[in-house]
Length: 221
Image (tube, rainbow, N blue to C red):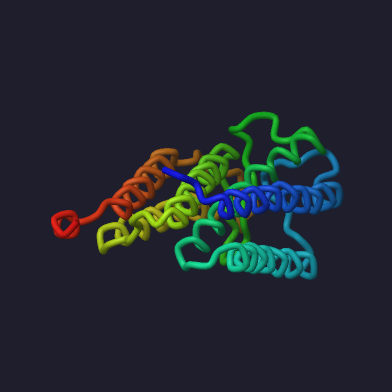
């Protein structure tokens, strides 16, 4: 598949943005952990002061707005913009962990637990889980940009939407279901990796189906 030079350049800039934005994110975590976990980050979680908690929630909301804005500027078509959003989000999340490792030598292993997000409830999980999701977003986001810019078929039908929405629900459940660990100061229960794997497979199936032309369209070609 021929890659449009403009899309390739834009995708490179979006990737560079994600790398730099990942550093911004990790630097905030460095300061928060120095304040709340001077002996090193670990579970059970410590509750943030109300002002800090509100600031963190607002910052996370602003992060999503920034990623959406970058995608809107980068793309010219709806699905192309969505591809840029996925790619920017994925690269940002991957390099957040890369920069954390560089700055504070964390995580020690991919099995280390982390607080992933706070909206609408705290998300927690082992580092490998958000990393795999972020890598999937990066790959499929980049593929979507290249595909749309080349004029190739991409149109999610009903089944693609069902698979993607189901994957999202399953993935969110795997991150936010352990209420005892996020709101009651307890150690997290074992992470349910089967939910992670299921959601990644459903996302992949939905993407592949969206790239396939229905038989009726193939007959018209």
